[in-house]
Image 1 (cartoon, rainbow, N blue to C red):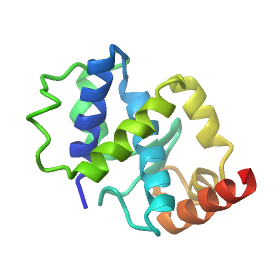
Image 2 (cartoon, rainbow, N blue to C red; image 1 turned 180 degrees about the vertical axis):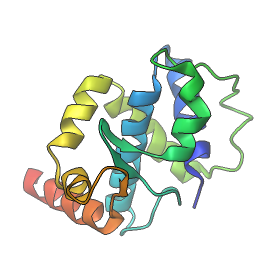
Image 3 (cartoon, rainbow, N blue to C red; image 1 turned 60 degrees about the horizontal axis):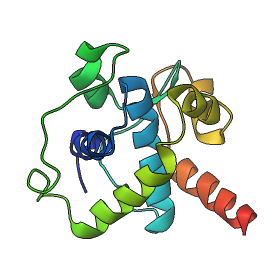
Length: 151
């Protein structure tokens, strides 16, 4: 299992390679959905160990937020080499993240905030108060059911 900051850096590097601009707000939602769909595709195994909290504008991983908050609302730019900087991430995970990004980069930060605010995992956590951790079992069950409904 990885740290969320490692996965965030890989996602940011993919974005830069593709010419996409990712803000901290969008990155937080991408990490949330990357975790959610990894859970679904890997029998409830987590992609990263960090907890995701229910903040006002949707799911947030505090360590990642803090690392990139200096960028404010501007796109995050990091110095990275996609081929050499991520040897700690296995090939299966890299492939998952590339496919994930290919699908999810099309959504704006606003779209992603809106999506999370309509879904049970964030709603359930925020009912208990802002900054409450979002339960990964709830995420797994909710998105597994969503996948089943689409079949």
